[in-house]
Image (cartoon, rainbow, N blue to C red; front, side):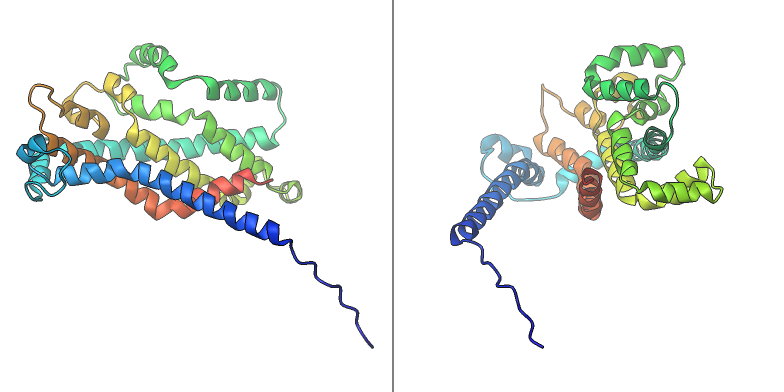
Length: 288
């Protein structure tokens, strides 16, 4: 018995060359943008290893004056950077825990539950994406002052919990879960809480990782709101504390750069460790 094989149609040579050219163009653009983003970090690192005299005399010379770690020891000994690290870590971790918990429940409710006013809640969440953070500073300040929360970590944690973008990430992921799986759990007698905790949350680990990492980074980098809320030096976070080190009258370039490097090292470490989870979470929530 003979089998007839269908001839394979080869792609046109022009299409193959066009695909290769496009891939090379994308690689060149990616490399160019990576270099643009990498230059400030490398410059800060090199400047932090030099002394102030050589920086003042020849700012663009990389090897002038030699390299040393004196600026790091001076910055660590003269300023409570360790306390600022701890404050930022506590605030960021609490923000991640509460944001993942509440935003996942909100996204689950908008995805599966049918209740009166659901469209209004969705519209309000959508409107929250359009409001700039600066427009909410004054109302939030008056609100938290009335609750006597100014000067506490809760004034920094609670505003980050109401994150519309996190709600939409979870909502998008939950909408991708097959409805038959939810209906089967409901037929077996599972409550909505069990469906959420035992069925949906174990599946949406990429979304949890994405929201957790992005919340951690945004909470760690927050500057304006912590500057207004936290008044004591020992309760400040890393961005606010680093800004207080800049003295216009007598700038200590190496010390400021060393403090900046100490400030963004944790973020780079978090991204390098969890970059696969970030890409996987964003790609999964965007595919229907």
